[in-house]
Length: 239
Image (cartoon, rainbow, N blue to C red; front, top):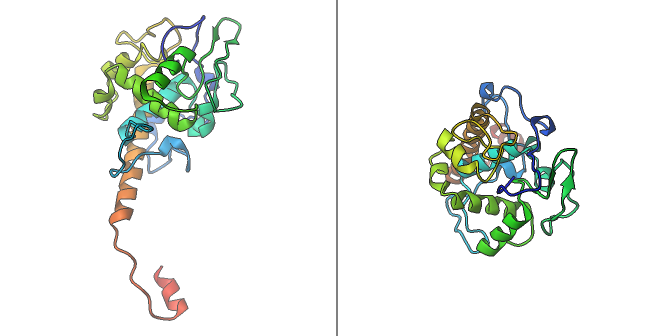
């Protein structure tokens, strides 16, 4: 969950994750894509994108891979589908993305008001809103809010290197309890994902995201197809 304070808090456990591919370290992008088509899990900005007040953070493959990995750790990956942005603590779905639901959910042992793909606590989301001025609680706002929290932890520079190191995971552990400290434990004594598991997930994501970026770049520089002046049948065979 984004930022530590909670009323007996617990990150969603691995059994609640839907659609995560098994044996991530053995999955190659050419064999299977971890990123569903038309989902924000594969959305990255082009090199021409200019940050603005509404969208201050450029989303590169390296940053998107880390965002996806946070979702995986927090139990909101949902196979990369956008429904993960609607997840509340305990696994229920919020009915609207107009605002943070600010609703405490009670389980047998814990209670928390964390919500969204990055499990923002209400006071953390209020900090995000005051700091970067995002509106609503939609996917784009949540992505930008998570990047703000990463920068706030002074971890954006390490994120941009494209390597999920143990140090980077530890720098984010005070923000997301599902990330391990250098000692391999949760910063708050809560359930935690093993570093090797996160690294495998991250590496597969990053390879796929970079491949998608390169495909888009190639499409922009590819020459237009030559005009066919023959018969319709002849032209069709050239496609």
